[in-house]
Amino acid sequence: MNILLYIPPSGRYMREVRCQAPLNKVMIDCNRTPLSLAYIAAVLGNRHICKIVDYPASGMSWVEFKKDINNFKPDMIIAHLTMFSCDEDFESYKIAKFINSNIKTVAFGGISSDVALLMKKETPLDIYICQEPEGAFGEIAENKPLD
Image (cartoon, rainbow, N blue to C red):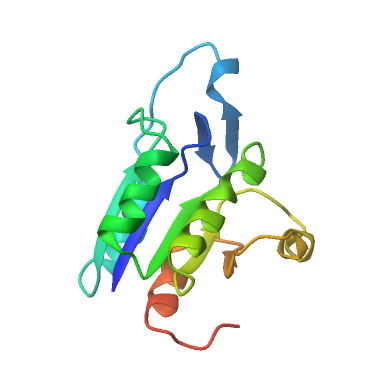
């Protein structure tokens, strides 16, 4: 299975679960390695082909995101969202599902304490991971039943 793990090209934000902020509003502007995506890839990498892309840090736009969906042909996409960028981040799922309606779309991050409200939004989001994501992704990639 090809899996794209990414930070959407929706702007530059600190995307830590407990530390989220637009980078244009902080005193020190630095890119942080998306360790949460690397941890998930480490869990999945021995059985799946994983690609990690931080679009904002790489200066890449929605054009490059579309190219990656078309060229890498992921079976699943996993995005790290923030409460500040959530609505714009959801655009990545619309784009992916438009290109391939069979792509499994997954999100995690500190975007909402009310998951039921989040899932009612009109978005092609298939799965939202509420807590620590690493363990859950192995089960999702293996198509195990979800609780």
